[in-house]
Length: 312
Image (cartoon, rainbow, N blue to C red; front, side):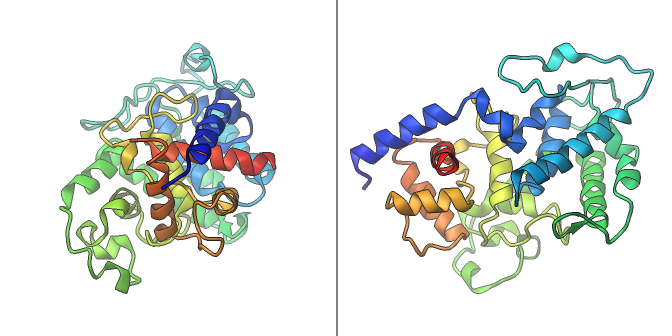
């Protein structure tokens, strides 16, 4: 059981860091540059996969991609900056929304003013991410990024949106058959969602849509920090940072993204063992403890622990 002192500290830290100022140096800023929810979730997913290593380096890469997307928008389309000049959104660059008749199905956020989705569907990634083994960022090559974007385009064509596809995968498999899960190293795509623990079903549903895609973690038993961060962006509502687009999912089912700062501060506060590895098991343990502090919304502790670690 957590001490009252620790609980009060964590709530205070979360209040301090979960503000619009958080967007300034965080990859979450990019999804706020778009006015259409379809663009927001798609670009957010790409941004999340590149969010590792030195922040200034991957932010620069995301800026380059964003600029290419905006530069490639139809010249005859009307630009609506007003849609994205809401309070709390970064003013580093403008966001644009053009009418785009993207293929849609029930559950697609909108897609009516999509820019990035149109760029993907029109094959803009084939030019920007030429199929080369030259590295785009760290160990991800241009060819790797091309595959990632190509898969996103395919998902939009098939399901209308990434959120719709994840929901279908999540709801298609019943719970159960979890007892042998820890004995296999196969990915969620091979296991099937019925074979994973309840705490990992959401991230496993997401992983199952990207089989063999190098840029996307394939093993839900790992920390999957980037995927859990993306899910936090999509699911948590009422936040100046997280979008809360996937209203069908529950914040209670999110796991805390385990980056270096979160691990270090969690250990320092006695929330996890100092030797605890970055794994799904550790994320589940930490999240369950944070549910005692943030009832129904344990992932909010990410702001407290991450913010504290960065400030130090």
